[in-house]
Amino acid sequence: MAKKEEQLICELCGREVQYLTRHHLVPREEGGRYGATAELCQPCHSTLHLTFSNRELATLYNSIPALQEAEDMQKYLKWVRNKRIERISNRRSRRR
Image (cartoon, rainbow, N blue to C red; front, side, top):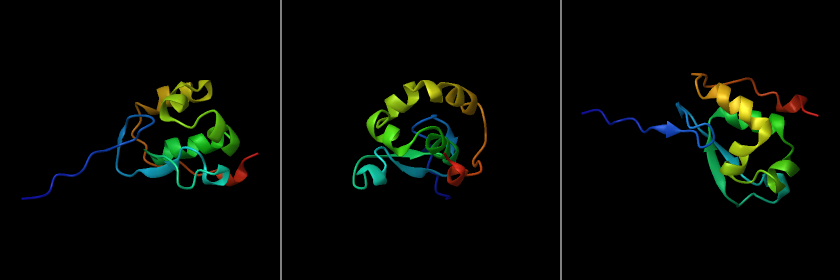
């Protein structure tokens, strides 16, 4: 009998996805190396780092509820919840 596949759910957008990435709620560069993490789909993870600086993530958006309530994330989360995308190009190196 085949083993039932584990359901992977992004903690930020709530979508079922094939892969999850580990997001440090306080970025490692801001002292969060051993702190709390969240399992996010790659599009959500990339969008967070494109939208906010590490300092903003560490001080203002260091929990899933805070990220979900962030004004800058509202339009994205509404859009992505109905999509079947698994990956978006990672453009973090072009940032600010």
